Image (tube, rainbow, N blue to C red):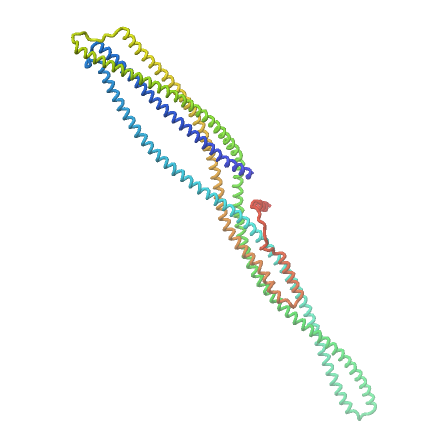
Length: 611
């Protein structure tokens, strides 16, 4: 599930830049459309200004034509320039126009100053935005660097975890092998001690038998000496008693025969005893040699026992140190187990969150699809807005052409008015000249009825044409305003949709930031755990070094004790077999081990703890 969620996260993260690109494209298109709309608005405003100018010029032309008609009527009536109402009204209108132009100039100056201040503020905001963008880019680069460092730290933590598990397993195997080797050595030493005790008992029994034989030899030698003394005394007595009778000789011969028989028996006994003594002496020499060998063996055994006692004391000391280190390691293991449980709880929470993540991802994907659809619809709306803007431009161009035609007609009307004014002035001058010449004649201009009717018809037709043109221009302006309102409404709808899409994207960004914050929190926890684990790994390495020393010491003692036992083949064979067993039991720490992944080891450790 985690991999599936990670894959979906990667897909969503890959889809986010595409959505961002589409949004950027839509925003750029929107900016272009807004720029075009602003240009069209400016153009429409310029057209409005031109229309207003045309209206004002038309009104001014109407006023001028009215003043001209009034002046013509006054001239017809013979009113002088000083007393003419039209001249006064014309002066007042000229003054009002001058004041309006001055006020417009002031307003234009104020607007230009406001635009300058706005331009300066916009430049400052642009600089601030550029600085913020640079800061954001640098922050994003720093975040990328931190993410890379965190990934490297995660890899190193995984490797250190694998090494710690391997060292822990090696330490346990070494401890078990050392215990087995120590037990085997103790059993073999006990067997050898029992065999030595049995051999010493046999030697003691042989010594007691040799002592008995010595006592028998001493008694036999004393008997021989007594017999020799008796023979000497008897021979002396025989020499003394040669002078005695035959009876005594017979008795003596009998006694001599008995003595000879006894001597023969004693000689036989002496020969047998000498043989027995020689046998006993040979046995004694053999027993002495055996005793000497046994003494040498006992001395060697005592030296071995002393060495083994020293090794046992050193082993016990090392075992005590190892027990202390093992207790420390067990305490650290308990701490690690507690931390692992905490990590498991956090992993459960993260799994629950990850279980919820697919739904969120599906929702995000749906929202992204909706955003894509809305972007497509926004593009379509933008295309429609572009078409409407083009239509508005076409209408504006037609309005411009019509306004140009209207301005040309107004200019023609002004020219005709100027011509009429020039004619009126010429008539006025001719009248003044005729007045100067003919003061007694009645004042006024004599026109025929046909001319007057023609002039009045022309003026009326010109007014009607001007009014019709102004009405057509007003209708076109109203149509342009309606089209502008429609385009503005479409733009407002598109801007609302874009704002909604931006809000949805902001929500998605917030969700992604929350996910990144959670990831950073987990990475921070992994960093802390890695620091603690490095300290524990150092302690485990020191403890494993002590255990390796404790395991290597008995092997060295056995190797040193081998040359002392070359005289005994059985002991050499036993030591050789013990070394072979120890070498078979103790694993090779330099053996190559395959690197395994972290998750199976964690699962195995959790399964062991549950058992």
